[in-house]
Length: 318
Image 1 (cartoon, rainbow, N blue to C red):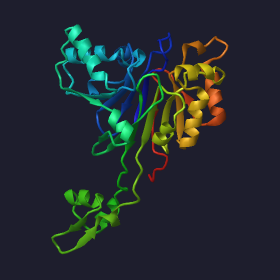
Image 2 (tube, rainbow, N blue to C red):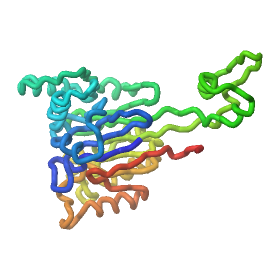
Image 3 (cartoon, helix red, strand yellow):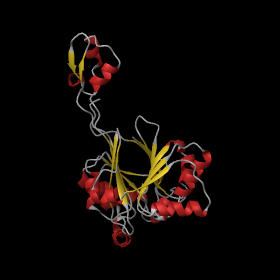
Image 4 (cartoon, one colour):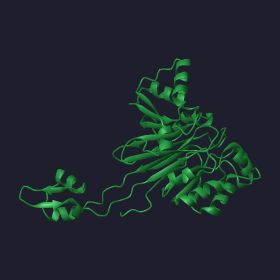
């Protein structure tokens, strides 16, 4: 999987950081998923190497403007371009009425299939939100001033590497038989030989997992959702010395994000959703927040707009 940060500021954009948006490029398919869509996100797409026409799913964490004001414009532009095959949208209960109201009031016509999914029940009951051939998506409620949700995308365990050399040595014809063996199935050949696919495959390979979490005060639910993930993207709106503000406004500090990463035993933490009060040149800067997080969780990284990360599973037999 590849993550691209399209907006990493909280509340309002700055010269260096737009408001919240993160794109996920999926493995082995020409498909993008978008997490949050703050104002100006479609402009960020134009400045990146991403293709908006590949967008298939949008996940909204909550209905505050810095996470959702860019969505109507982005959807309308896709409609005018005429190159979308359809989009599924996931988010809080008010998402549907918000989009319906904006589109109707502005006389905007999307012109491609859309479906809006409410995630509240899945989050509250801890059930799977999406289950396709390759990926699982789960979510959990956050502790914020309005209903908000974190999302986990997890690639399913993949079969082990196929032993091509062994198959060739046994004079097995390539084609559908190879595919069946790689799936671990038993195969009866026309000459009477029977082979078990398990004998031709190495150990199963773990998939990649990422968690997107913003906005929330420290949350035990996020720890459970993020447990063992390869990447945790977590808001760090405030520095540790501003914890009173964090509690008041229901946001996380850099140390809360790091504590979550440590307790969840994730592989890497990326801090995002930074308050403009820590802009370079001020007494405290984003690097100070990063250093606070690293003191608790050393494998921490500071997000910036257009940063791209290739996420690999923590253990790979290849």
